[in-house]
Length: 304
Ligand code: 13P
Ligand code: SF4
Image 1 (tube, rainbow, N blue to C red):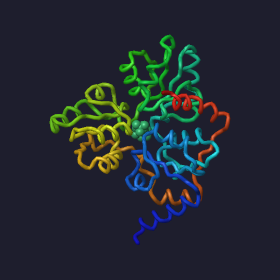
Image 2 (spheres, protein in one colour):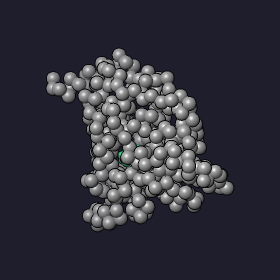
Image 3 (cartoon, rainbow, N blue to C red):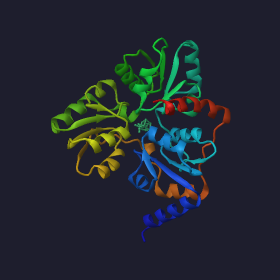
């Protein structure tokens, strides 16, 4: 048996013994997606974390995702298999700055993208993901201004789709920020039959050229169910692993080979195995902060 197979067997034994579930984001390395009990986008992973009967959640993603799982399942042990896996966009918003901002706009509703720290969520009225942001923002009372934090690109996409005037934070995802209209035009010339699916974290001028703006889970579903044969995929490259496995008959063209989030690639099989052996690195949150951060997420999960 080779080393990888031995690791996988150890992980399987430990996950049974620990009564653990392994959740993985769609951008994680293929080796991690393949051993996960469930892969998904941020919304799907939050729902799983809230509903699982497992005692331990091993979260393969970036820190805010594991924190969200802990906020929703405080009695469970939530492990991030590496000590350091930040989301660079989430770290562009700090709770103290948000509090100051809110003090200047006391009439505003604060809406946070799920890509935020627990401390920022604790300051907010609503949480959204890329899968539900437009519907939730569109449902908020018309007379209240909306402060949207931290993604200025997802925020401006919501503003454009809903006709609402949002106050935007100046955050962005460094991976999607670099997606340009020129890249879309070039790919369309190369693949004139292909449909362009784009994550709404890309800049507004780039998203405007896409056929659809979708969350990663939305892209997987769309490609699976579509009769079209070719798709230009404008998001982080990790998604191609599942896309290719679920839709082997489709041609998938990345918008750019540069779209790699380094923090979504740090967790390896050996880290998952070590996490299950040593119960490292548990997410710990102050209970009062956790309770405040739970409110906007519960509102989101109950939103229909
Ligand atoms: P999704 O919720 O669409 O999976 O996006 C998460 C993310 O971090 C995108 O960069
Ligand atoms: Fe954060 Fe961007 Fe990485 Fe997603 S791709 S985790 S938004 S840095």
